[in-house]
Image (cartoon, rainbow, N blue to C red; front, side):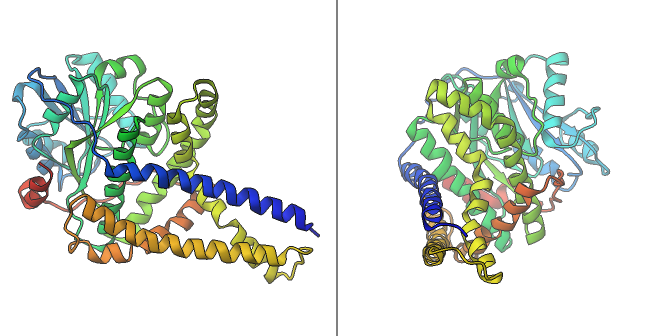
Length: 422
């Protein structure tokens, strides 16, 4: 038998923690409606090494290289490196034919982070002539002004920067639309709001820039399934602020099916839990020592899968108590009221997810009719995070798995997006 006082105390603490967590993100998201600082154009040019890790990407790698070859930036001020790894197709031959420098990964690698670690070490040892690195995924297309925007940021003191991650195929399927909306939210209500608040942004895996002196000093040594989130944590602990550059735009291919979306998000969630296990203690110690919100911000991000799992615990307890006819002295009504409140809150959250999806599509000036179905079923995308996070929290069997990319679009095929964002 549990006393009413104990149950009430637990539920009160639980409610306060969940309210604090949700309230923080609600508060920060509001600042996504404010404009961010634009870096002035500079005539000084940066020497870039453009890095592309590629695994069986023969179908789409050429289109990315062509988009990079059409940058509005001096041709002699950047080189394109393609790093094939674990390939079973002719990715290397196609990349070389398109004009890229191909460096075969000779290390045994299990994920993208290890490929990036290899190529950074290779360039520093064999061709250390670059001021900064820009990293892309093989399925991307790159806006013609990307390198110039990153050049302007670097020449205004920015050491690490994340560009605007857009979508090249938002209308292909409901799931392509879901992930497109998700990244528009990251752009508008995460990175943009953090720039307004003077916090550090987050790296999103592709379309980011790192100054070469940062790599020379700290390397790029990540071990989790989410090298972008892990490196974001390393940047914070090493005193670097990640800036968000909205006019440095990358168009990303989104998964078309539930299976591919599940695979992608399972990796994200597992990698986030791995980052929590690896960095939570250091971030908390620095939070206590330096009292900087950036450490708090990253801590909340790293514990997000745990929070969602914890969020359904009262409902699970209520079901189990009724299923096994377990009595909780004087507190069943309190627990029932709590569950009803959670269900109402949960329902409201699902409704607000639809409203938020619609709002972010309008805010980011996207074509709402292309993702209409995804907007009004976005709650399903949110709901499916629950089993993904449960698996990620309680199991460790997730390994990096490639997602096959087949959307052979060229930049001219999405010209309306380029025009909207110029």
